[in-house]
Length: 398
Image 1 (cartoon, helix red, strand yellow):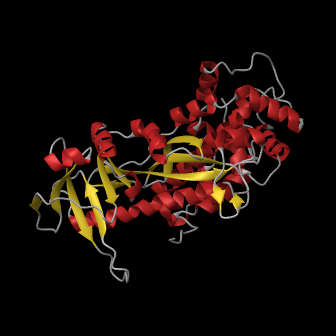
Image 2 (cartoon, helix red, strand yellow; image 1 turned 90 degrees about the vertical axis):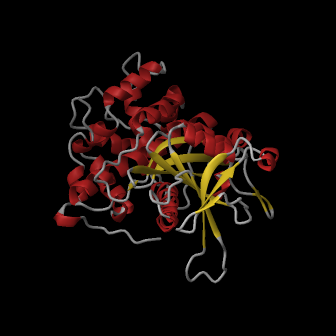
Image 3 (tube, one colour; image 1 turned 60 degrees about the vertical axis):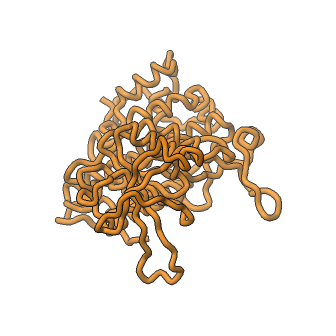
């Protein structure tokens, strides 16, 4: 994994970007209220834990994964302390916090994430573009959740060599912007759910002008067709035993071919989608494994084979982003903490929103300093945010 720099260029500090309005600029209070109203979750009477407060509370649960529920609430209330809000400064009991979360449910968080999450790279963002195409990628992973009967029944758990694993798990698929590592669409489900099925739920967020990079698991006719149908391009890695018929050889070593919906159509060479195939081997790879890439960019002049081969390895940004979510936000050894399925889903989208906030702050700092967003330490950013959350500056709810 590449090492990320701790400091920004030109003496700029990351903390400079945690001033008044940071949270409200990314997740505006008016949008929170609007979403609560749409879901019928707005507070009908004055409560110690109003719905708006609990939205931000669930997001902070992700950033303070080692803290108790009451400690996280204390940090949030301290952040609101100097604001003129009609919110009790008393830290509620754990049972009251759970009831307040249960009143909100999961849908409001999913809908809020869908409204907030967007690709954020601009033309000046380093590493976010290829020939004018916005680089995005799809991948899946799992998260462990508490070993409660309801969670186990709803989500299931993986098997192990000696029985079953210790904890139930959720499976999720995310659509990332590679240059900034923001997740701008996500879908979660049971452990046994297929990543391909979950990926169908994020495909509508792919737009014209994007180049979607994925691994060999997603390489099939249907995915090719649907991405092209969104007006985007794709760059897939194919399985090493894949065989493509050469229809036209290009000078850069790539060749024109087609992919088909099934074997019958392939034999008849009907209903295919034209693609360009790039075959290569990595230098200093003693295995001699052949890598096969398939792309919808048909012109070698527009995208030479060697450039696409190098570009594919930008997919590593997906693995780093997952590491940020599963290690540096959640922290090693900590599971999601929710003890029933609805709150698990709520907490999952809280995690997605928390990661989105951190990555937004990093991107703003990178633009100002001239850094590549990848070069700014995610761990350092999370630490700075945790320190500033207890200040009034981090929240602006006007």
